[in-house]
Length: 115
Image (cartoon, rainbow, N blue to C red; front, top):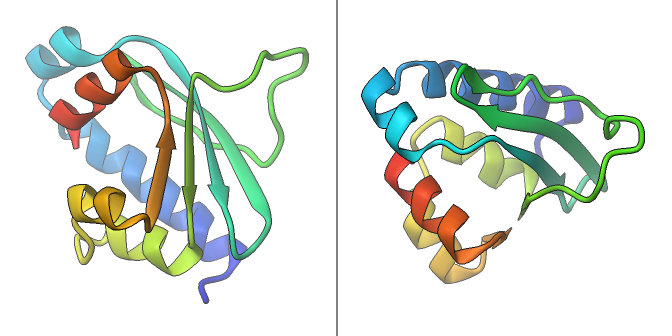
């Protein structure tokens, strides 16, 4: 099981990887959304945003007076680290139940284009 700090590092790395997505793809597929990432085996939830400028930063507490996140991910700590390191395929992880995503159908289609 990965630690909370390792999960924070993984989410920062995910933000850096998102920065590598070309501007044209971001402009076409990114709609500003709030994101929560619940790490099920640690009982910790990280909160962030996806926007044209990037992904994150992620924080341990939700923004004050914020409505529930638009996109909610649930994942185990080891799977989060493996996903960010390219050792776990997102599509297979979702279909096998290792990653759960609660989002609108439109958001799912847009995210799929970026991952």
